[in-house]
Length: 231
Image (spheres, rainbow, N blue to C red):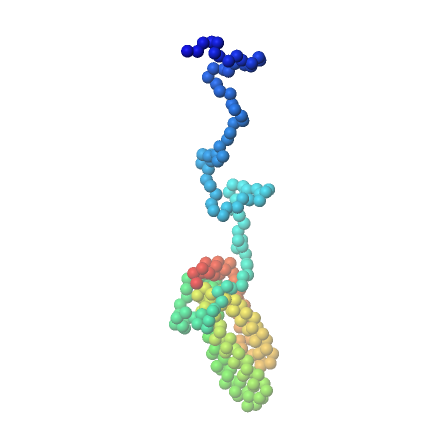
């Protein structure tokens, strides 16, 4: 048994330890990976923190509209890859079958189609007239014959492009717009040289201009954009 004399003497000025407490050996140690707070969700893979100074948008902010309903020109990205893509699907049997298009495009399609058919009829009549004119004035007759052949080719292309436009092809709409400009040049040349015998003249161009404007209205733009991923 020990007696009080076995207890080592204390140093002068030392405080006796308080009963039931252990003095800390150093500063408190924090865990290496503290647990996340309640409700914390980890960011998805590939998340990048916003740059310094970034300010979050106010609640209810929905961003700016893409085009605000206005006109926006874009080059077509659905160009045909081969000759078969440039032909109407199903041939000419669906010429008079109008798809679910907005009214503007339906009117534009009928203008292009009827104008192309009338152009073919006028071109055939112009061929006979140019043959007669060659007999009396060969130089002018050959020029008129050349213009008639060009008009026939444009009328055929107009019918095919109108049918492709009806399918939702944006490249066909773009080609019809260029075709309207060519028809203006053809109308001026034919009216000035051949007295309008080789083409539809300026009235025909004005009708083509109306059909072109209808293809680029906001409702038509939205229809082409909606069909862009389906083709």
